[in-house]
Image 1 (cartoon, rainbow, N blue to C red):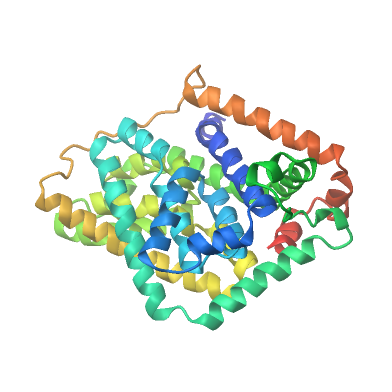
Image 2: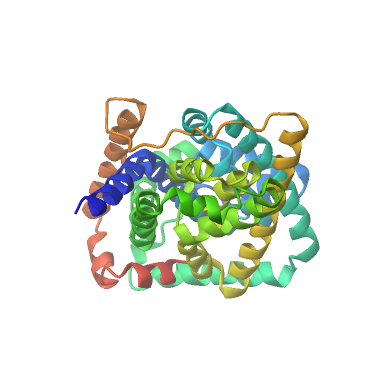
Length: 384
């Protein structure tokens, strides 16, 4: 059974690496939904101007979420008044322009990959804004917002206390630290986890299986390593496809990116692969639940195009600057749990999650979960 334990060990290691980021992302999502005023979000992120997209990028970098939590938080911003373009910009920044991702890339793959990520991210944001300006129609946005709001309202049927938006007077911190604000955050936090935890678990298990079971020579043939020119063309095209099929997410996809780099994928292909954590199959399903089929398809198509183009841009730019790594010696190993910053962060945020869970059950949240039958898919479809 060693083959099975190997895959499970990798999955467990990835879970441990991203656990604190997951909790942080869903906590921020709950805070936004519970106490951030719609007008405040609308003023900062209400359009698709350079200033609004820059604000969305900065907020995303500060949020530092995993892809699942980022999607939930972007939905929250959209419902609070952010433009759809700004919400999607936030998603890209919060998953691909964050400090911990850069650190892990540097440790496993080298500083050039970190630099490529932080250059490629803004390129992708600019390209996405252009595509949205050309192809995104007002009616599509209106339908997506109506779908999200209708779903959220549906999830609160029969439970009046679940109308948790704290919109009264007072400062942000006063609303957040009030008894009602605390309860609101706890209820929304638990609902978000209940809706998506199966998608997260499936993604981590599949990633571990691919990393453990697919031999290196398969990747070398698949990425055309014997034909350098075609490999440079093929890599950015197929990198997102591999990500979509492997269910990788956020920081957890860096170890698999290291496997693919050692296996022969092009430099630009690695970049497009890492960006594609926002269009993996479980997240595409979440887009469908949040915004409807039509907008989910639009997101998938436009994100894919911008990921590929950003990969090509990085491939060309780094080749011209002679910055493309010459060696394929990324560090690939099963991380062991030790007393490092990840462990301390996990313990700290597990404590936060425990406090929110206690508040949730103490404030009468259990009947809501029983009403929904513990069915995460049904809960997710109801809650948007």
